[in-house]
Length: 410
Image (cartoon, rainbow, N blue to C red; front, side, top):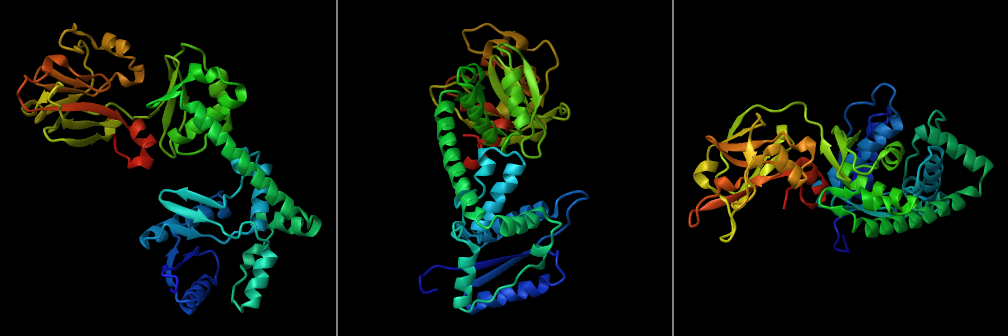
């Protein structure tokens, strides 16, 4: 194009209308008229029984648009929602009892997973867009499903237009106020969490010292990073009301579709995924630096060259290491000058939560090499001058919280 930018028109074929193929050809022709590239994605499957067609189509459409944009090498995705769409979204969210994030409706600009989603017409009335299109002789298609009142948004649109013609601008303005309030809440949460989060641990005692509103706000923000989705209001309320200082407690909480638990331990809050059962014994070759995922254990081993001044394990012992769970009677020695203690006492001293004390453990014959969560056993340290590696265990919960940083442990 004259600007030097490459423009790609994206079309999602939902397969819900008999004329959907005609719409596809129309979009392809319009893109060709303007000299733009064209890409299309057809949605597969169908809504499950009882599911909302609108929600199914929206989720599939967003996923398809993201895939096509990234395949085209684009980092800017322009969407066509306008002021009426924003007003309707605000009302629908309010009817569902949404909080600030829901009432903020659709953001005009948002970066998500390397792609900037922008709605340049969000503050423009539909009438202005129609007038522009008519003035310039643009061709468009009206979706007949927009007139079907069996869809809640369509019923709402008809009532707002007929009975409250002036409400659109006010509702859209309310959404903007909610967006500002949400931005402010996020800034306050970031400031509060800076002193409450250490690694994967949230300081519950520190959280309790905040005002109720700020504690709820900070907890919601932390849960979004941990669960990769907004937490249900009921879960937030339970955490704030049920936690007791010093107690060991658990609450079910899924990371997207991955079952898991939130655990309170020593006044800290942690998340861990549910594991079906303890895996069997396995022989591992860990003699090269790298990341060795152990999905059945909910984490993996990070192997790195040991600095000259730091202890490490001999390569020949890591080349054939036996990985297994606790059998009973094991002892662990934290440092060369310390005393070997039972795994239970060593875990207690290290603050290792009870749900992370089953392992895995690494063995070289009868010599204990390392324990997940505790580190390398000092009795297995390689002599000075011998090439050695450092090994540590990283939980899946840590990796999931770092998805935005590449999904690998540092």
